[in-house]
Image (cartoon, rainbow, N blue to C red; front, side):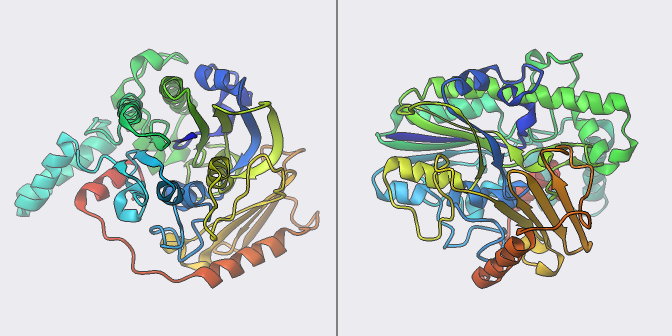
Amino acid sequence: MNLALVTVDSLRADHVGCYGYERETTPNIDELASRSHVFTDAVAHACATRPSFPSLLTSTQGMLYGGFDHLSEKQVPLSVPLSEEGYATGGFHSNPFLSEEFGYARGFDSFSDSEDDPTLASRIRKYVSNNLDGPVHDLLEWLYNRGQEHAGVDVGSYYQDAESLTDEALSWVESADEPWFLWIHYMDPHHPYIPPDDHQVFGETLSKRRGVKLRQQVLDNPDALSEEDWSDLVDLYDAEVRYTDAEIGRLLRGLDDATWMLTADHGEEFYEHENFGHKNRFYEEHVHVPLLFGGAGIEDPDRHDDLVGLNDVPATLLDEAGIEAPETYRGRHVLSGERDRVVGGWARNAGTDLDRIRLMSRTGDEKYIRNDEADTEQLYDLRDDPGERENLVGERGLGDHAAALDSFVAEIRETAGRSESVEVGDDIEERLENLGYK
């Protein structure tokens, strides 16, 4: 059985057609949904790539085993047991936080994270950093930053585009021995939004300059954006989703003999709660993600309202392959219907500062958010208040939410302990800055 895991950065469920979005952002995914298992209540355990991906690939959580600076040895990517059982394994992405330095290459025979192909702008900046100093260095560095932050100049590729990533993955599949496992992670819906012109069908065609400049403005001061600015941002985001959808369709048409899962690491906020992006908060726009399970061997496809968490994804794929999961795996098969809660968390210092932790307990009906740093609590009735506007703390009992989070924190403490954080090079630092992580 060939297996594929397709993940998309920053793709919120309610901007996908088969989840009820009114715009035609995802015609390919929608067609796939008609013959796949679709999970309408899939929830991420965290709100950004670093704390979320340990769930997606190792069926644990980013807060466990010492935080999410890098994968612990006890956080075993599903590529490892698959490789040990004779699978050819290939991983393809361009998110710096998922690179080999952070432990994500383990178990992959072929692993492409774009680290060996820096952009021209990156190479120039690296040369300036390594070979110039004094006033000349300072001037060039200022011009570089000024160009991005204020003029909206496109100073280089922030990530590998969906088309070239699909080409690379399909080329690997053509030469790989069966059975194989493919993981591919698309970055295009992550800001800055600079979609190809032919996918900008939701408004006027906007330039790359406009997309880069808008991104910087909204990161600096989201309160200052006009309604037109927000409208342009959503149009650009939806165009990026549509572009990625086209490449996902092309990819999965080329993998007609594979069982696959498709999901996202987290969502994206467009000022629903007075902010932008994915800044370590736990509202639905951040944690409600699409999840499809389809391909070869799938029987009785259907829509499922059962609650599932992203750490169910690797557990499901290993179960489908008939391979025993590592003992640290915490997920279960997505079709089991056994989950009644998703818990998640984030803390400063890559998840190690537990005095300033933020936590979520999410059931099918309610969400409880506790922010120990700000000493606040929020409780929402997701059926009556899907927009999470009315905080019911003090009006309604917390039920089992507080106990579930206390148990989660105890598990975080019990599993803590790891080596020092990963030191990364200038190229990765620059790419992280371009993606808004610094």
